[in-house]
Amino acid sequence: MSVFEFLVDFCAAAKELFLLCLELFVGILKACLLALNEILFVFPQAYVFWGMIALVLVLIMGDTMNKALQEDQKRQEREYRRQLKIRQELEARQAERERKRQAVEERAQQIRQSLRLPVGVIKQQQLLKHHKKTSQRHR
Figure (cartoon, rainbow, N blue to C red):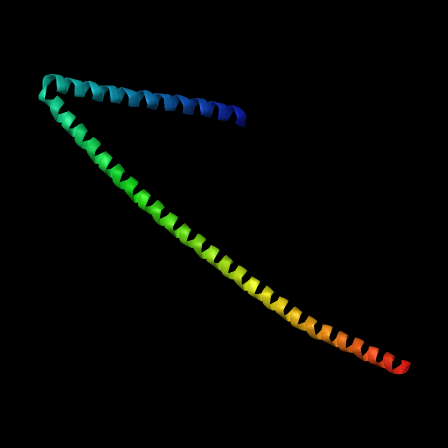
C-alpha cells in the first residue's frame, strides 16, 4: 500500500467518522426537542415558563451587547481624540518648523542685503577714486 492510497483511505474514514458524529448530534438534538415538546404538551403552563426564560435570556444578551457596544464606542472616541491630538501636535510642530524656516530665510535675506550694501558702496568708492585719478591726469 502506497502513502497516497493510505492518505485516501484515511481521509475517507475521517469523512465517514465526521458524518456519523454529525448524525449522532442531530439525533440527540431531535430527542431533546421531542422531550421538550412532550413536557410542554403535558404541562401547558411550561410554555409561559419557557417563554419567560427566553425573554430574560434575550434581555440579558441585549444588555450585554449594549454594554459591549458602549465600551467599544468609548474606546473608539478615546482613540479618535488621541489621534486628533497627535495630528494637532504634528501640525503645530510643522507650523513651528515653517515659522523658524521663514525667520531664518528672512535673516539670511537681511544678511545678504547688508553684505551687498558695502560691496555696492565699495564699488562706488572705487569708481569715484578711478574717476578722480583719470580727471587729475587730464588736467
